[in-house]
Image (cartoon, rainbow, N blue to C red; front, side, top):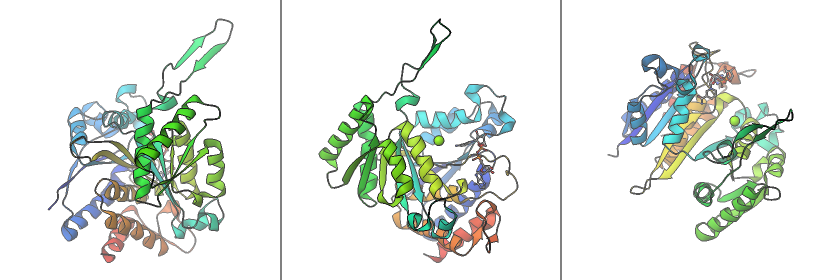
Length: 369
Ligand code: NAI
Ligand code: MG
């Protein structure tokens, strides 16, 4: 039997509550489907700070590096507001991203039929939507040097941020997008602004060359990122995979995500480079939402974002495609039945707790086996 190692970092606030529902699924899959998941749990964020004064310990960091995949809940909360910059809860997530070199951030925007009516777009534009935004996460203007504020001495200051991309950074993110497209509808739209940015010129050139060299079976189109923003809200279903840089990806992925509903529904994945020996990628899966201190401890958080992140883990780290499909369908089935947590509650539906939502999804998953 294959052993699949999962390192779980529930974190703070609603993180542990949501993660508990994933643990139910793992237990089910291990006992009924010989999934072979070997799990271990660590501390991250405020809970790690309280235990040992750092946002993640070196020991837990080593476990994250060694695992096949990391499942991350959420970190932070007002309790740790005064804590030093380098040990504050968010530093745990930043260290994981940096040490694991997670350069590819995957943000799907999927429309569950039962929630289509709640979208800000017309139902026919959004129904059946399934797109994936691949955002470069470790380069670009958030990290480029120089990055300064200079006093010009005449009562003025000058702020500089630098958008910097090297060929290899564009090549590897393009590679991830093309590979993912092959497992989906086989089309990639690359977004940049080559009309006004040198980094956009290089981006387009390298994506095109990568496509020609290794992925010519995938359909590639290019769009200026501002036009891409318009098209995302005008006709979102025209896209399959979108690949873009860190800054544009930050905005475009938030726009795409909000087309489809609540923060409690949105999963994400961050992938690193393939291991030279095994070819497997380091990977971390987490909901888009934070620790929601306003509702933590009440048992009312929506666990779907965390569970859908686990579905991405099945798909991208373990190639368990049919299990991932079944799990996503199970979420859809439960929503179709009108079972809702408070954040997505609608008229005529039944409001349930975090744990009841988790149970309903496990049952729907089991029934599809
Ligand atoms: P948040 O995402 O935690 O909450 C925003 C609003 O959405 C709140 O009203 C919350 O109750 C609701 N919400 C979020 N997830 C939900 C879920 N699963 N079910 C039901 N309702 C949900 O963002 P906020 O309030 O800005 O930040 C709270 C803390 O979380 C801060 O300390 C922040 O730094 C941290 N944070 C951590 C992130 C991470 O761990 N990756 C990401 C974003 C924020
Ligand atoms: Mg953002």
